Image (cartoon, rainbow, N blue to C red; front, side, top):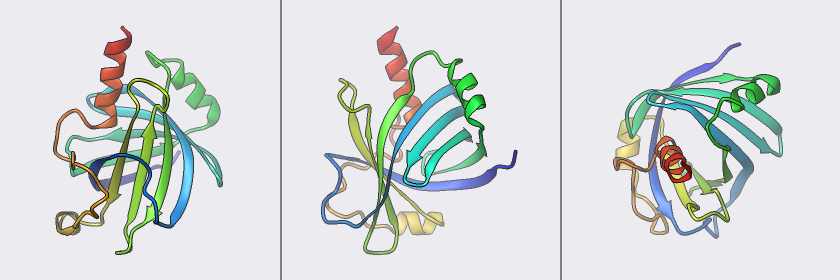
Length: 164
């Protein structure tokens, strides 16, 4: 099993809905769950035009930049790990758009149709300098990159507490 070990550099924003007037590059249904949130250990299933992908992800500490290791999973292994979760997977309607400056905007509607549903957007960067220099388009809402409570792992914990 080979994986990808990277430093993820991204900024995160709350949005009111999927943006209009941008070129949509891809979309997928993403379902993910957390075996642990500190450190982050997540499983993810992504179903899109290219098929279904299963991943195990480890994330280090940090907000705008953090270490991330992703490993591919077989569907059977994903199913076995899913059985270990304390609650059902979080579902995201995930879409990627092209921004005018060549960057990609990743937007998600989380848990549509539930009381905890919300939209957010992320932009990934090649360097911290590029991330700090980025001027968000006006349609991006409040930036929450450095605010506690806005990671998907923290959302998982909030949701778990509401259920139990």
